[in-house]
Structures are given as structure tokens and as C-alpha cells.
Length: 69
Image 1 (tube, helix red, strand yellow):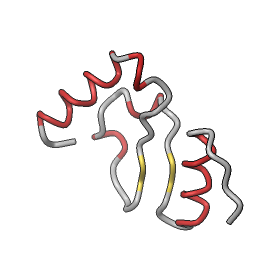
Image 2: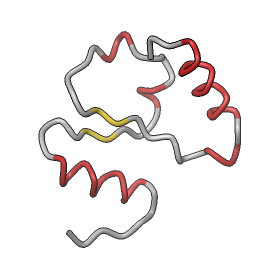
Image 3: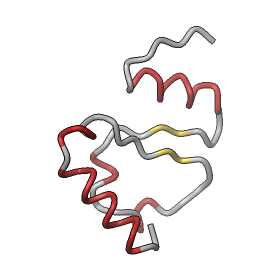
Image 4: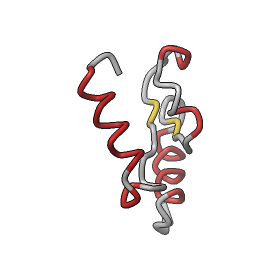
């Protein structure tokens, strides 16, 4: 999120209907959520930090894809 281009791309995607419900922040290492974009906490996010299998299951659930692992 330090890159200005990442911020521009996020704002573009949030404005486009085709990306609605497709943007899912993924946490894979500890971070300070307060420093992230103010928009990300409002989205469904997936935590891979403690259980990657559960993270994949949650991501596929959010995207409406079945998971049987």
C-alpha cells in the first residue's frame, strides 16, 4: 500500500462494477491495519496468517466457488 500506483489501482477497481465483490484483501503476514487504505477494512478480508487452508476455504467461499478440501 506504500505505492501510489497500488492506491490508484485500488480506487479504480472500487469504482468499477465488474470488480464488485471480487476485491478481497489477503493477510499473509502481521501488519498494522491502521496504516492500510481506509477502504480495505470495509471489505471481506481473508486471513492466511495462522491457517492457510482455512484462508483458501474462506477466499473461495467469498468468491462463490465450492471447496471440499
